[in-house]
Image 1 (cartoon, helix red, strand yellow):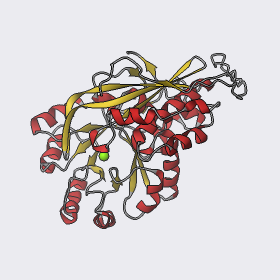
Image 2 (cartoon, helix red, strand yellow):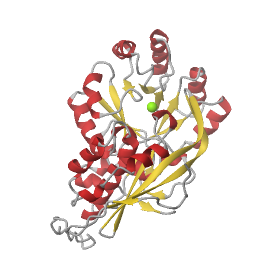
Image 3 (spheres, rainbow, N blue to C red):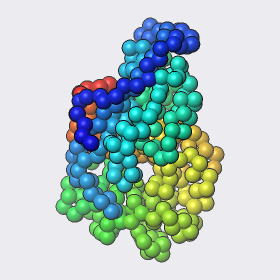
Image 4 (cartoon, rainbow, N blue to C red):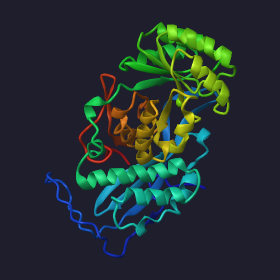
Length: 378
Ligand code: MG
């Protein structure tokens, strides 16, 4: 299947009947009037993200990430969404397009009925989490734009409470790791990938350049729980904050043992996908890494934070390599989490959006409505 680069290939969902949406008045005179005659129109196209550096984690390397960019047009307003499909998650541009072709937004007359719309989208098929996320993100962008408010404000989130974001250093030779670490000097925290057989060399190289706190992501790369614990004790002495997915996600008993004995928090990433995973993780992991491409978008991600907090678990928000669209969307929730790893848009050379910024190492939200992005390229 081949795709035209700049051609949106499908439009669905025109509503023929008059919608029963009240006219909403807002203090801002920029707020568009909602007439109740809206027709939600979904369109989408494939796009390949070009990575600035070859990205290597335990298990694989790559230079591009396939994404699908979506738009929902409603009453003259265009809202944006994105699905990112790193190969290990099992989705592709083809599978996302197949899913989106099944979505009929035309049956919904009110875009504010997010629970109804997203429950319908989720019910269309199993899996397809990134495909579902690109609709969720665009709908949240839409309601923010309709109300002329940034999403964090609609959720009552204080934008001043954003965390610092880590910047990721992939597995590589000491020479390259040193250069990448030096290039990342504007970040106040780094995330270092381990599990490639050169763990101490990686950390020693980073530490030869900087003393900033380090998050560790093993991507399931360690094989033995006792060796893992020995390494964690060594890492603790090197100023490491937490360990993400140290062992394979199926090694549940070993991970529970490691969490019980580890001096550092153990965070679930590959093992963790949806909201109903969280309760069973209590006692096995210290916390969870939420990503919109796993959670099916913002709405479930917000619920995940609430549930994890109720279970007294740590919360991290991360991303895939993505444009500023999906990263800015995730950033709207970042004031609610312990740790953020929202650098996906900074790892690519062909972003087409302007959005969230990293200022003095901190995730910095703007006041633009919706998910806080503007399209700067096609
Ligand atoms: Mg991870």
